Image (cartoon, rainbow, N blue to C red):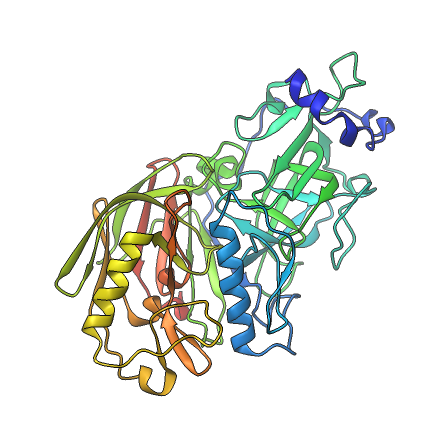
Length: 439
């Protein structure tokens, strides 16, 4: 802990020591009775998102998502803001989906990135020493009657998945709990670990709530560097003890799910808390927790028609990654099997990003063979919309090869029209084929 504090000293000196005056130690938390509720799960490129850019074409948005997926899949590579030849800016590790929450009393609404690959929920707070620009003012804890700091000498300051400690000038060791959270693209946030009331608004208005929980542990960020991932903060949905789902715990049965609609749909994807994934064709597979944080599923093999590809590897299921990434040899075998089964002539992707592309006008005749991902104990049958993606004049395989030293991902295109449920207590992920437009 002392090593952590001294390493952060150049950053922490920016934090005003006067902020330490009102300290409240939080040792335990009580939640309400069991709740089941649903909220909008908003794609950042949808018209409901404040980041929607009407001047961009649908193809430009999709190309940006591909490049964001490329950055996100290379966790060990630090990338700066890049621009493609088509003029589309790419932020490393872009989040794909936004959740609307409200913090404080009275509740202040925020639209933050949902991230199953991290645990801490945090927002930028006022007065910010260094903040990333956002469309609304940072959260002001002095205007909330339910805000409380966590004391750095309490058990509530200790979490295995984030760096926490006391300020270097806090000789009494009873000041507020400082935290530091870093991300793969070198973005990071530093601030006070605190508790607040978190409210989930209805889809229509912030004034109508569907669920409220007191004493939610979150990061009040005063120093941010890098990217804010197109949101106003991060909502950690990972498996760790400080994640949103872990904190709401038995009140939501340790469960959440989402249902991603096709891109052509005029409806919004949904996230549901507290309910089991139901249906006659639901299948479940255990998840593992490894480093980097996330939900790892064991992929035994992939069937393409009558061809079985042996895999025997763990992949990360991630709503924030567009494409599905597979180890190069496995990807090559899948691509070649699909190519042999489809009686059409491939064409190159004009942008040179994806392989196995066909002219969109002829793509209606693709009729690809059945593709089944054989996770441990769960066969997930993918439909053509989970496998191929229309990009203007071409329709391409929505998968890419991953180098051996990188991670494999089961991306969000592959998850469209499935209710994907996470049960943190049973440690399993479930899939149910669903028409997500009426979920």
